[in-house]
Length: 283
Image (cartoon, rainbow, N blue to C red; front, side, top):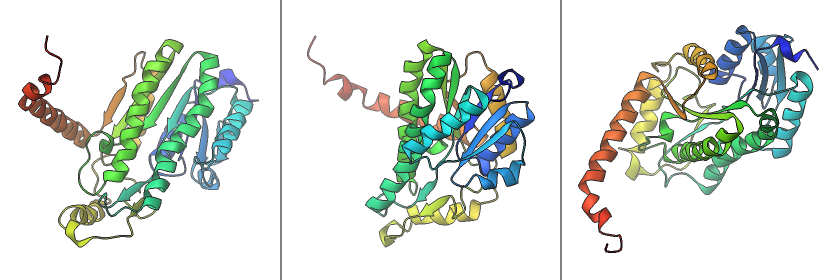
């Protein structure tokens, strides 16, 4: 085991070989923290971040629950504790809801939802023993407001939002913070074919909805407004907060879309309030 006291925090980050996960890992290391960086093939992490005492690259397929427990064991053997868990591993699925096959739906849920649960359940006994820690679940703007073309992907992130709300209530009395981060569009590989899979089935009736979204996403790749390095620095600020938020939006596009949805929900609530009230037993 290395000297625990020599590091301000120990991070455990999934999906850390590229994109947002790699940027968070780099920022944490530059901040003097230790990082357990996981990916299906951790060799890519070493190639990106180099060999250093504060970095432990670990092979981890988050869909394998036993592997998650083994990764956490390696982390505590090396650094003695885990202060911050960043559940970042995941991928997108572009296509109309009807276009998505059962196999495609099961696969994305296995990674985006079950994978997050596997890792969280493996880490929480450590944090409960410490009576401190911070669980950060990377959701998406699509976890709060989703439209045509990303319904199945968005539904996995809606699940992450719900799990995060419950975890927040369950873990707060134990001194453990939970934050669900909702990034807008950031200039990463997320819109590449390596991170966003397209449904194999294409239905012509959805050409003007989900079909247009697929085409727009491809054209938007490389033009996203969000800077991943700035997001990573914002994460450092987040973990230093005494009272971190349950939800944290990242990017001006996320802020605008979420405010738009909140206004829509309020308008609809008011329009149908009388019918909603009519369903109670008479006073």
